Every structure is written in C-alpha cells, then in structure tokens.
Image 1 (cartoon, rainbow, N blue to C red):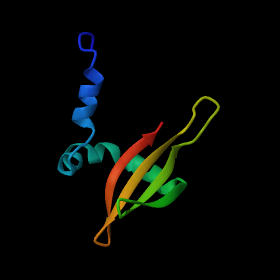
Image 2 (spheres, one colour; image 1 turned 30 degrees about the horizontal axis):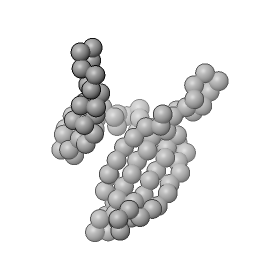
Image 3 (tube, one colour; image 1 turned 90 degrees about the vertical axis):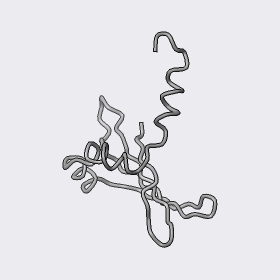
Length: 96
C-alpha cells in the first residue's frame, strides 16, 4: 500500500466477483452463521422488483443493525435474478 498508489484498484478488480463455488466453500458459513440467520429472520425488510436487460431482479433490503444515538445502523442487500422460473442469488452487499 505504501509503495503502490494503485493498490486499492488492483485489489478491487481481483475481488469484485467471487465465483459461487469459492463463496460457498470459503465464505458462506462466515457470513450466514446462526446469529446472522436469526437477525435476518427477526428483521424488517423491503423488497423491490426491477428488470435489467430483460431479466427480472428482486432486491431485498434487510435492516440488520438498528439506528441508535451512537450508530447510524446498517442494512444488508440481497439481489436475486429470475432465470428459468427460479430465483438465483446474484449479489450481497452492505449499507453502509
């Protein structure tokens, strides 16, 4: 980082897309542990349907950390796309 001014862009380019088999093997259990699954079950959510290049996408926003006087709160974003009548997980993100 100290000697390469483009370090962040290189890291971002390498990690922007994680292949599904790597995600399931290496990351799924890290993210979807029992505690997080309970938060998802108990949380409020909003969803939105939109079409991107002729494919139906469904986006869920789940408030996973409530706003307090000392924390702005947070949400997780899950995007699914409909392919051959099935919803497939397409993206996971966090806000902020």
